[in-house]
Amino acid sequence: MTVLNIDRVTCDGRGMCAELLPELLELDDWGYPIVRSADVPPALMDHARRAIEACPVLAFRLYEDPTAASRVTPRAAPPPIRPPATGR
Ligand code: SF4
Image 1 (tube, helix red, strand yellow):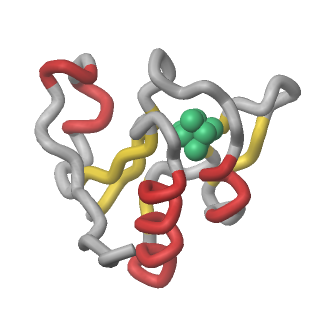
Image 2: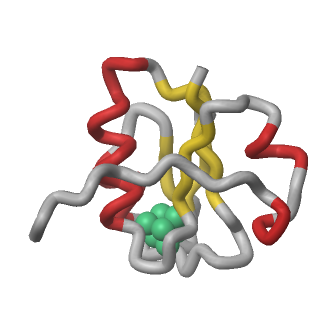
């Protein structure tokens, strides 16, 4: 299972992730993302990867281990899934 996690300390609330993944995210009144569902279904993985690429501060992450996203601080977290290089 793949889960999404947002580092709330790093996130600056520009909301790009919610625009790219509205099925799982919405924005609060200040433009910060609210996670409706952290589980990323396979059909939304491409959208989730685009959200990772679009996050200007690398606060949006995906984890294969569902316990990893909630158990640790960003410094101690296991490496998140990185989207493949697009060559842009
Ligand atoms: S794209 Fe990144 S910085 Fe912007 S709201 Fe989403 S997680 Fe926060």
